[in-house]
Amino acid sequence: MNVLGIETSCDETAAAVLQDGIVKSNIISSQLVHQKYGGVVPELASRAHQRLIVPVVEEALHIAGIKKEQLESVAVTYGPGLVGALLVGLNFAKALAYGLKIPFIGVNHMEAHLYSNFIDEPKPNFPLLCLIVSGGHTQLVLVRQFFHHQLLGETLDDAAGEAFDKVAKMLGLGFPGGPIIDKLAKQGNPDFVKFPRSFLDEDSFDFSFSGIKTSVLYWLRGHKILPADSQQITINHELLTNLCASFQAAVVDVLIEKIMRALRKFEVKDVAVAGGVSANSELRRRTQELAQRQGFKLHIPKFEYCTDNGAMIAMVGWLKLKGGIRSDFGLNAVANLSL
Ligand code: KG4
Ligand code: ZN
Image 1 (tube, rainbow, N blue to C red):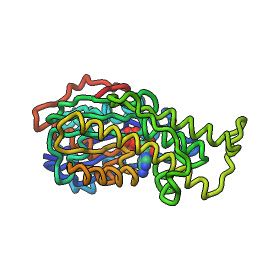
Image 2 (image 1 turned 90 degrees about the vertical axis):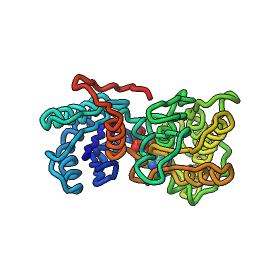
Image 3 (image 1 turned 135 degrees about the vertical axis):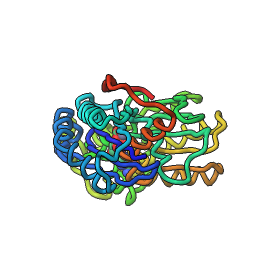
């Protein structure tokens, strides 16, 4: 069974071919056009997807060594995401599936992040606790069986990845900020500044990251590193690495605490982390340490499956197809689709 997975929800144009659940190709074209704006510009994202969708899909078929006529299904993200960006992939996928007379499957992007943990071996066992940390979402989910999700908590304001991107922008770093902060933090002291950790109520599984972000801003202003009337930052390398390490430690502390709370309350077999921020080396280190201490099996996708990709979309498509689920061609893009 050859499934093509297409992803265009944000700034990555991605396509992958899955053959009987095995990844045969995974092509990701990251749109560099957004870098100079320090964030994703929706209209530019849609235009870039339009330009890239055909070559990216052709490359995915070529690398997998198949022709489009050998496809047996097309899976595509229909939300959540930027509506104009989603529509490019969705309409392309519908047209391709319709023309080839094969099933078309709409995929929830957050589900795809969750099931990116099922791409490689060993597969997670249920009940599974999954922390999904991306640029747009931060969610803690209990999965009792395939596609039976209980949302335990989510962010009340900024997503974890969004906080990384905003703090990176304040520090005069590029976009996306997560990987840059991660790299600089390796050389810094995480105890340099004790930024506040927002754990919320004792029994809350929700998250809040806007306070940490504001604390970084006030610290920079208070130390005259970022003047109140300017975006122009003056900072030396050592201080930069210390601030990156301190900010990252605050975010990771909160994520770890929420996993520990859920483990105290719910009986789970395995724990998984997914989404762009799951590429973060400190989060990976701390969750691995926790797994060893508490004796659970931890799953984190390979780097190429952490950030947006087509393989995770094809994986959900394949799982749904096996379960006899397919979508109607009338399916529309849903910008705020929930899990
Ligand atoms: O899942 P993703 O590719 O897109 C969304 O669905 O949002 O996540 C992108 C987010 C960005 O905010 C980016 O800064 C963050 O993931 N990210 C990281 C790292 N790599 C990507 N954050 C922290 N550390 C990283 N190594
Ligand atoms: Zn994503």
